[in-house]
Length: 430
Ligand code: LRH
Ligand code: MN
Image (cartoon, rainbow, N blue to C red):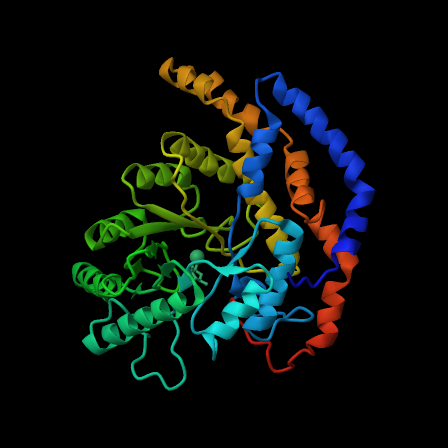
């Protein structure tokens, strides 16, 4: 398998930390043993855990005000995959990449597929884009896409989504994520029922084109780019649309797409209870759709979401939603942020495995609020870093991905190989 960081060099870099990891791991093993938990069974699950990285996340992100490109920005999908291969090599938790079309449209899909496979990468859910107008596009999406009042615009948006599915099939993907920013900025501007009806008809047309082994993931968002109403503004509209559309049409929860303080872990439980929880876009936020690094602002919420997911898997071990990161890296090296965020999501998952669910159920049944929340905190307060480090070490990754990446000189090397394009400043998330 092709690697952009030498494996021997990586092992030498790990060697300095290996003894400490083994000692910490054994100490944690003894501690968990006292609670009847076999650390190796947790380690195995940690090693199986993966989260997809967004192709649009390896470039420097920005806001509507400005974007300050970093050094060695990837200039095309192949350089994005080079960076994704380094994230996977060091984190050993991100073997899948989620593409966005047309941003990542390849001239030759099989060439792109082979380019990814040389690194051991594959393609996760495909993302369509009817929130921007492309050069030469017939109809504009200024006033919406799948929900536009003009049938020609809706048909153009439907055709684009079907085209993304066909491309995804050639790339080996198994899902289409549909996020539309359709909505209004002023009361009265849009008819709520008519626009939702257009959405249902349009998404149904896309669903009918879906291969039998594919899922379609509907992504809700409370606001932006629309600032008064958004057609798929919350889990309720998403659930209704998924239910109306078909069995393999599910809801996707982007953590940043909710009003501040919304109880997202409860939404996760509701959607799962009714068989419509299809996937996640993990990130973190303090105010709006900030797309900050996962676990960087509210790591306890991330843990509580995985606590619900692990509870669901206790009932249904085959349950496996699509896990993706969806972040915008405005002030950090995107490779570092994506490695660190993948580990934070993996950490939340591992901690959720350490919750004593029998004890929790008893406290809940007994309405012992103190001990119920304490049994969650007991797992959350455990330092599971030795398990994450051992998982990476045993899988051939880096014990400490960020320090290893910095020592590798990868960023400096690509900064030389990818001279900055002085005209590509601008603004916007990508
Ligand atoms: C919308 C969103 C969506 C992507 C876009 C890049 O805010 O979360 O998932 O298409 O970001
Ligand atoms: Mn998203």
